[in-house]
Image: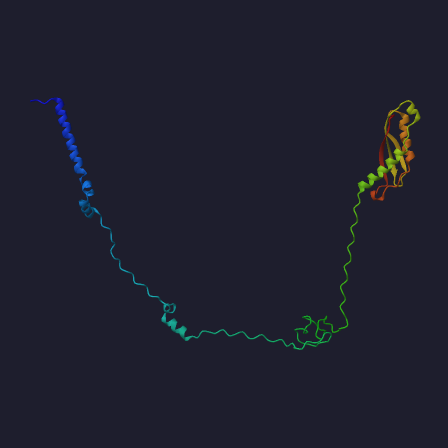
Length: 258
C-alpha cells in the first residue's frame, strides 16, 4: 500500500519534532537536575572550585639591634672608654667695676683716675669734673645755650602783572571817554561813525604820538576823537610793577545820533 505524499510529509515532520525535543532535553538535563533540591547538593560538591590556599612561607627572623658602640671596631671602643671626655669649665665671673658706692652730692668735684669716667657723670668725661656736668672741673660755669635759629624770610607775594596793566589801561580809557564830545557841525550834517585812535603813554603819564589808525570817513569826527585823547592827558604814572617806560595803546570812539 503506497502512502500518500501528504501523510509522508506529516510523519517526517513529527519525527523531526520528536528528535529535536529529545536533543534539547538531553542538553538541558544538567540544568534541570541542578535546580532539583535532591541533586543541587551533588552538583555543588562536584563542580564548585576549591579556593586556592598559598603554602606557608618561612618567617624571616628579626635582625638583632646593634648599638652604635657595637658597630665600631673593638679597638676604637676600648680607646674611647679609656679617654675621659672634657668637661666645659664655667665662665669666669664678670669683674666688678672699681666704682665707689657713695655717690657725690650735686656740684661736688670728684677725682676718679679710672678710665671709666666719673660716677653719675658722662662717659668719657674729664676726671675731676662735676657730676652730671660738662667735665671741665668748673661747677659755676654753665654751658651756653645754642643760638636760636634765624627766622626764615617771608616769601614775597606774587605780583599779577596782567591784572595791574589791565587796571591801568581801563583807567586811561575811562578818562578819554569822559573827555569825548560830538561836534555840532557833524550833528547838523548827521555825520556818524567810529574812530580808532592810537597813542603812547610815557612813564610819567604824558601822551604822545596821537593818530587816527581807523577813520570814520568824516574829518570832523576824526579830529574830535584825536582832541578827546589830548584833552584827557596827562594820565597817571605807569605802575612800577610793570617795569615799562611807556605803553602804546588804542581806543575806539563811536559817534552816533540817537
